[in-house]
Image (cartoon, rainbow, N blue to C red; front, side):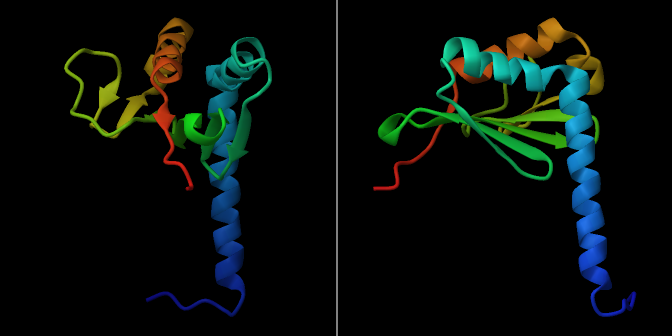
Length: 133
């Protein structure tokens, strides 16, 4: 077991959060995904969507009350993961699918057309949020 001085754990935790955040920003920028999400908000939703950013995750939400929808994007290393509604593993080759996430490797998202097509699928079939009622 590694012993740390009091307060050192929080410094290490903060350094890890910063590393995850910076990596996520890099992947979002290099892939063009950040611009694509902004374009959906501007052009399709007329600015009515909003973003919630976490260390290595972005939730892009739109709608109100019973119609609230979102696209959940998570970054792990160089991979982009799109959270799906629970389903069976996809049989067609769209991305790496485990039934919970579609994972796009660097080679996949480097093809901007492929990334745009996956993002369109996520916009057309977003994750619905349960109402808070």
